[in-house]
Image (cartoon, rainbow, N blue to C red; front, side):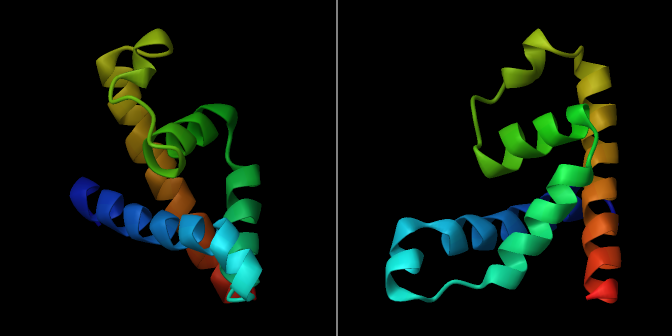
Length: 98
């Protein structure tokens, strides 16, 4: 899977995740707890740098250059690619276990 495909997949999954966690879904009981539990479980098992990248780039979508205070450009993109790969692989393995 190339870089753009990883970004697209994670954006899709996190959009579903965020939608499921929204206040309206709690109110109307349309809450898919399996998706939220699975993503939370995987996220908690990532290392700190990977968590920071997934959180800031996908979950909270903070400013575009949030990473400047933590990483150089090359380090950021190298870590982001690894974070996305690990996140996807962990989700796949977790789904296979469930």
